[in-house]
Length: 91
Picture: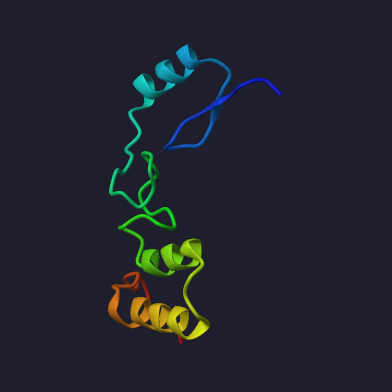
């Protein structure tokens, strides 16, 4: 398989580095460098700081937490993180 370059924001693939640079210059995608990953990534990715469940995803990636600790992290994320705003009420 030939070497392919992947855009860190939209994840589309390019066949050459020059086409990748041109794609990034044309589209100006926003990427995040919070430290959740070792590379620029899309904001809201599973381990990104802007994702409310980031602590749980990082613990799962580290593979050192017990099931009880994972459940506690999930509970904290659910009860203490802001949710999506309500757009309309349904009966």
